Length: 194
Length: 306
Ligand code: SF4
Ligand code: SF4
Image 1 (cartoon, protein in one colour):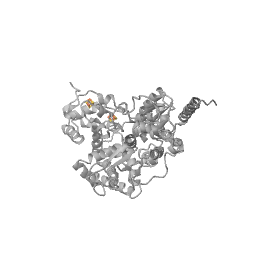
Image 2 (cartoon, chains in turn blue, cyan; image 1 turned 90 degrees about the horizontal axis):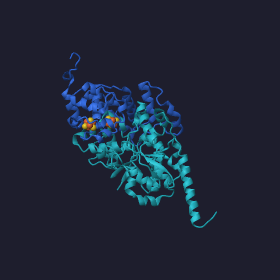
Image 3 (tube, chains in turn cyan, green; image 1 turned 45 degrees about the vertical axis):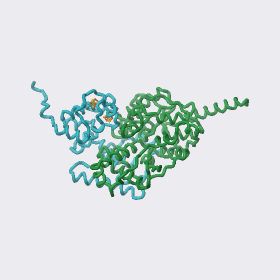
Image 4 (cartoon, chains in turn blue, yellow; image 1 turned 120 degrees about the vertical axis):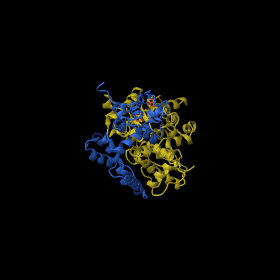
């Protein structure tokens, strides 16, 4: 048994407890029926299926779970939660894992995070999202400069992408900006990725 | 009951037509929508993907504004906004969570925050099928539709309270009252790929492709939707989806408010139909033809032989 993996050495029971606590879900009840995976619309791009993620959490395999691309590609559609026979809110577990991965600095699919941060930057600036602004920031951050260029003519022709952002009036933009600023400040004070 | 209207950001950008048609339809139905002054973004998916309290704070600011306007309910056309608003209001009932959210706000949010509902549910509450049918001026007869709800409208079931989370039927009720024929659509609550069209195109193209493929096979004249992101994925991104499915689609994707608006006799230009990427022209012509045939029958019945 020379190349047997020592599960014991990789297991981190504190990780299981932390996921359970933060998500409010009793993960020990998962009996690996696979219903969550069967209905998951994102499974075809996952490196580990959602039932495997659940098993990994049970076993305390922190590294494998938090570094999985599933944590980033999950669409948050809640089909898994709906179909779980043990009423585990699996989507909530996935979201919890996303938060934990970010806090650990494990960003396996950086472009997904870059897209989210670009979106939030426009909210901080204008109080409302601005599609062209989000796209420009995202292309700049990810250096994927041709993202969706094929859609631009149709979208622009139909006036679906305003060139000028709509600012939230009546102090709205500034107030939303302050929420995001306070959030960032608090995250930094806690030493986690904002 | 006083309703505060929360349009959501996409109503001013990629879903201008949803905003327009919602306004026109509600006006025609005598439902008054008073926009929340100075509303701001709910944070959508990116905010809750990053932090639950950040998302709740962005929502709570708007719920608080609505509360201060004396509103009992907030109404929004967008399922993503609705999901965030409802989740935030729910979680704010927990004191430790509320405290964390209040830290992010200019001032603590109102103790009692208004409930939120969708424009679709509001219409369904004000009008039963018969009353709605009696308001129809231009029935959608001869039109076959698939109702596609997307994933957020009905899930999580306990938060959204939208009936059967895998088989909601409100859109079918409203649109059949308007005269349309509704098909059974098994993919009605399967996710379209959400906002991943930008960072991971296959995720959206494959999922939207499946929906478009089934609708095409069922021979519907259009897909009826309620979500700006679903609409964008199925309409603007239709060619990307076709490529992923190795197929060719020509499937109009209309907001249910546009379809209901047509039935109420509102002119297409007031419903933003010109902003669809896949034209609704064939559908409009079909409606006209059905109406012409109907009135020809009517004249015949009256004994008039033209
Ligand atoms: S559906 Fe529930 S019990 Fe079944 S594998 Fe998934 S999480 Fe476990
Ligand atoms: S919420 Fe995530 S894991 Fe669950 S079914 Fe949807 S995409 Fe899959």
